[in-house]
Length: 247
Image 1 (spheres, one colour):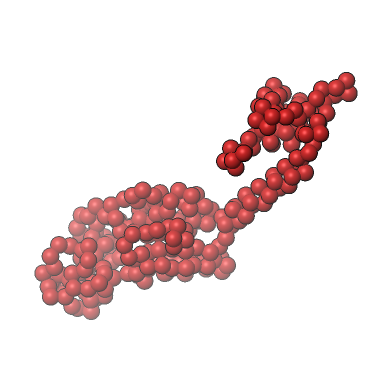
Image 2: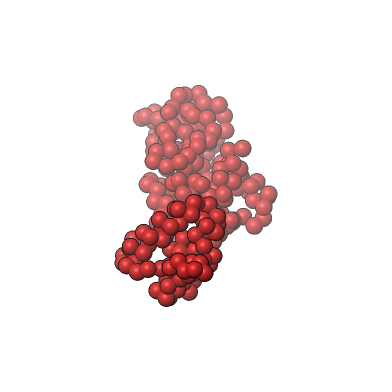
């Protein structure tokens, strides 16, 4: 029998009925009707090609065939329960891997992680620079931050205002994915460096308003998004982090 075709519901019913030697009491445990228990047992017998129970004047009893696999069956259910507990343990972990643009990490994310960790010194963070596409599985990411129009295929929430803000005066400092055709001679690697250059008096930087820490002066459909695939997004530790970063 292929593993993917294991009749797990029927086996769970078999375990309950064998312990109680009663379809009625097994039904009470499983919150179903006795008729449903009987149907599951008959379907399991058809699948296995053997009789599992007999009715006798003394009541229900297991056949030798039904009794033969009970020890391994119950060991298997215990292993399932251990597997579930192991998977759930990740939700209580206090280690989080976060991917974010370098400039946002330095100017916005790190201070907030420091404040969040002050609430729980057991928190641990691993930070990854997101330069281009994100592979949550390969990088074992819990959360990512991107500058985009939406969360895309993932779950997500926007942080900070949409739009761009101007910092400094003079010729516009260019940066990838920034405003079209910078008018000045200076081009830098990212919006954070553009902001630093503007603060140093080397021109004006038109950067995401969240990065600048000011109100937007230009409309732009993009904003920073906290994103993750649905399984990660549902984790307690990720929900708590999102709440801390957006609160």
